[in-house]
Image (tube, rainbow, N blue to C red; front, side):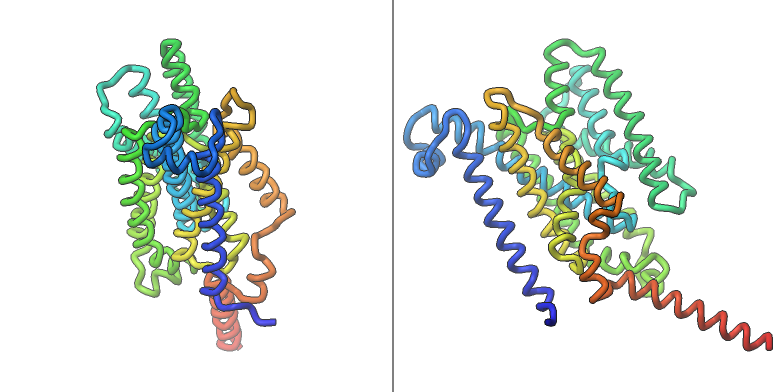
Length: 369
């Protein structure tokens, strides 16, 4: 039976994702202490009803849900960009020094009490993320394999993590509590004053990612083939890394380094739509990342109530388990059967290169004869 056209497969997946996001957001607004019915929650959003319900919904839960949506979308799209640039499905901002670099910058501001307004926290996080990514790229210079780049990023991330611990050791007790909650990845006590600049920053970065996605769709066929098609490979790669840094910085500045969203979002999209190009992966990854983060934050808030666990702990457990499964080959490559039936651009380019080399070798043998 022939597979349905790609557009017909994308629409149902996107619709299901939107339904899950709406359901998760509704549950996050209603569940907790106190638990509200849907009608009471809607009235509270409008400013009517019990004063406690109005305060809880409008000042505590609503900004938290919006922050989870923005952070999840940003981190998932950042993972999509990095995986397209490095041709490696395990590439995430967590493994390239980008997230740890942003964490170091924010930790320095908190511990040393630098006079930085909350509106400028994304800028501070961007500077730290850019420094972390630059250190990783400098350490990986000359390494040809994408896996080697990831190893260099893991080493840089470990070093930056040690720096965060050193900075935290100089903090006061209240600062230690704030940093622990932040570095674990948490959306507790998020306020509108933080969410508004974060949402604007993330929206601009997501638009840049969407504009860059068609170029990355060409890049996935390989650097050599993309270059012959007229694509400025180095420039596109630098732009993609810059957009990734901006996306991670916006999320980390408020929510902290929520782990493995950059892996989980693209993974879910490839699992459901294995032949989707980067131009479709970007918006779908944003939707998947938002759904996962909203769900993880809801679980972190109510699973062990009244004690709240870090969001990053929930996403890390799932992300690491899936990554180990993929590496061990139990799941293999998501959509391997579909790829076997309908080879992607990268597979076709690789086959073309092999056939071209075989033709040249055959021609050389005939010339020798």
